[in-house]
Image 1: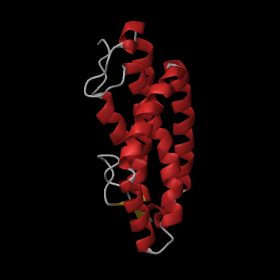
Image 2: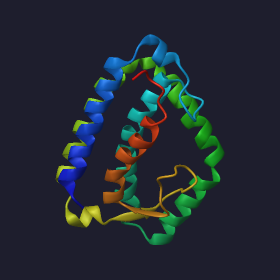
Image 3: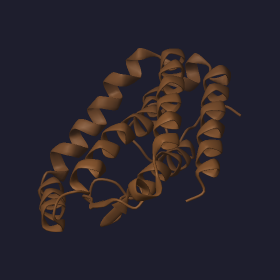
Image 4: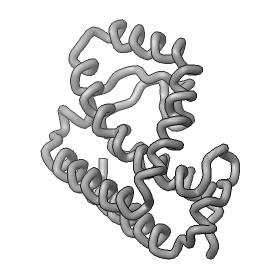
Length: 170
C-alpha cells in the first residue's frame, strides 16, 4: 500500500471540500443533488460521514481480523440482512446531519482526516493486511472481504463518487 498516496488523496479531498463549501451559495445548498434524494447540503454532510465511518470500520477490522474467519463472515451476513434499515438510517442521518451546516462539516472533516493520518502512520504491515468480511449490500465500494489497507482507501472512493452527484454552481 502506498501510504503517502493515501495521505495525499485525503488532503486533496479535504481541500476540495473546503473549496466546495466556500463557493456554495444558499441556493446551491438547498438544490437537489443528482441521483440521490438529498439536497447538496445533506450530500456534503454525507461526504464527511463517509470519512467518519472509516474510524468505526478500522476498529471492526482490528477486532474481527483477529477472530476466526467464520465469525466475520457471519457478522457480514447479519449486516447484509439488515440492509433495508441501514439504508433508512443512512438516509435520515445525512438529512439530519446536513443541519450542522457546511462550515461546521468542513471543520469536522479536518478533525477526522487529521485523526486518520495519525492512525495510518501508526499502522504497520501486519495491520494493513488484517481483513474481515463486509456487508456488500450496504455500499457499492464494500467488497466481500476487505483489508485494513482497503478501508483506508475507502473514504476517497466514496468521496469521489458522491462529489459527482453534487449540483453546485460551477
